[in-house]
Image (cartoon, rainbow, N blue to C red; front, side, top):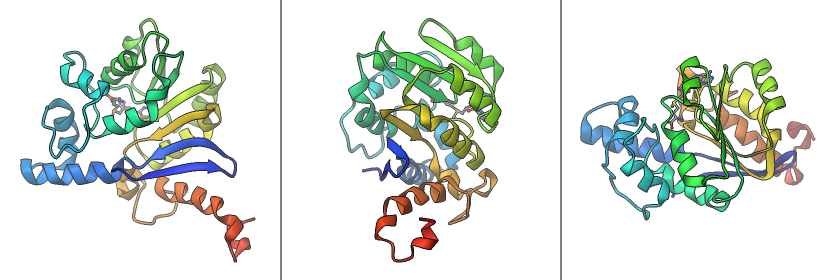
Length: 240
Ligand SMILES: C[S@@+](CC[C@H](N)C(=O)[O-])C[C@H]1O[C@@H](n2cnc3c(N)ncnc32)[C@H](O)[C@@H]1O
C-alpha cells in the first residue's frame, strides 16, 4: 500500500499529503526493467497503456473511466486511482469544488467531472495559456505560474472554499511549497490536499536532493516534528 503522511493539528488543518512517489518509483523501476526505457518515458507509457502490472486492488470508477476513455490524454499513474478513490469517494455526488494544478491536455479534468458528477466544479490551473480551451460548463481554467505567489494570492481571492486540491503542476520544490503555503488555508476543514510526484524531492533539477533542506519532503517532515513537539526534550530546537 502507498505510504501516507497525515498532516493534522498544530496549525495544519485536517488534510492529507499522499506520498505517491514511493510507489510510483517502484512501478517505474519495474516497468523500466521490463520495457528498457527510463522512468520519464514510463509516465506517459503507463497512462496510455492498459498494462496493469502487478495489480493489488480492485478496479474503481476512475480506472474504468481511464480504460474506456478515448478523449484527451490523462497523464496519471495507474496505481493513483486506488489512492484517489480512497480519499475522494466521500465527495462524490455532492456539490464539490476541485482545484487541479496541471491541466496539460485536459484529460484529468474530464475524469474528475465524470467521477464527481454534475454537482462538481472543477478549477484547473496551468502556466500554458492553451489550456484555457478546456473551459466548459462546470470547468474554469486559470492561467499562471504556481511559483508566483502574487498569482496564487490573486487566485485565492476568486476561488471558492476548496474540497480537494491536487498539485500535479510543475513539481519543483518552489512550486509545491508556494502552492501549499498560499492555498492550503482555502481547503475546507474536512478537505483533502494532495501533492503528487514527491519523488522530485530527490531530483536536483527540481530543487530536490536526499535530505536537502527545502525539499517538499523535508518541508512535510517539519509538520511531523511539530505534531511531536510536545514530547520533545529539546524544545528550543523545535522553536516552541
Ligand atoms: C503532469 S502535467 C498535468 C497532467 C494532468 N493533471 C493530467 O492528469 O492529465 C503538468 C502540467 O503542469 C503545467 N505546469 C508546469 N509548470 C507549471 C507552473 N509553474 N505553473 C502552473 N502549471 C505548470 C504544465 O504546463 C503541464 O500542463
